[in-house]
Length: 391
Image 1 (tube, rainbow, N blue to C red):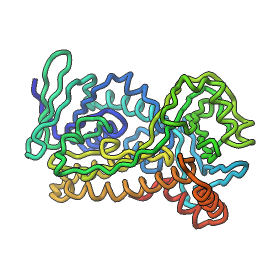
Image 2: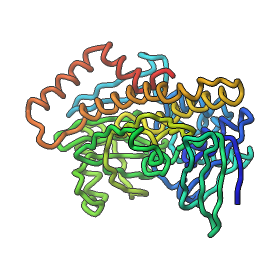
Image 3: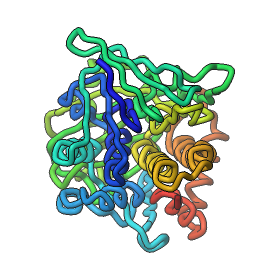
Image 4: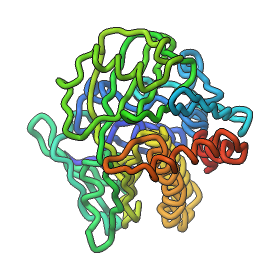
């Protein structure tokens, strides 16, 4: 079975859904192909802090109502080191806020609107493959319910994550990946308990990093740094709660409300950037092109900024016959990607304990935190990056 559209999008996560909606809003035809089921897509437990870029895109689409009703606007966050708590007042320093609203909820809103607005999404599409991306008639193929399908398009947009087929379709002679793998992971727990603090706490402790976050006023998300060879079974709930109380410091630790884990998982950390983000008629966005350690809350937000650039480029091509719009996408997106990678990398170095770290390295962390605590300029730099650099 063969179909044709203007833009074929691979991946129905937030990046693909946002892109599809932005194109449809401008009258550009788009079809999204997703390998997983809707329930599986909604079951991914991911990011929870949205920059202004992401919230503005949802508002632009008229899809921000539930986010503004149920999300939690935050004016700041905290860096903890022992008993010291350094508050970064992002509202005072930048005039902006971030929004605590989970990726699952963003995806849910976008999925519901897709059905209402006629954005076609093909779920459970197996064996997705890209063809002729260097020609002016690229196409993708997939199988569903035992039948083979083809979608021809003017452009294919790869929003299919780190392990998807899109990036793999770019020849190694053209593309290059830059990667740093970190020697630890994050053990995360999601629990229906009130958060221990009204703002996020990033903690540097001798046992390793910890993060106190939230998804709502009644649902908490916590993380601790663990060795890469640790297993979920090594961390029963009681042990994890005890460790969180220790690492987060006396005040936050005393305020922790314990409860059964709704979800518990260990994720490795890496920094990764692929260049270029465009080859021929294929354009990459989100995790297909880059991964950040979650320390800086940049993964979903980088996907949103990619999509902002990419939608503008495609709209320029189709609506204004701008021949340069597509050509400038990769360089424009990568300039912002690398700055966000830098911030996430620096915050990871500052707040984690690395294997084989010596006393000099630890003193450098302390000196950095001392400087941040005493310098408005340092706090402003952190705040500007945390709320998101301008597009």
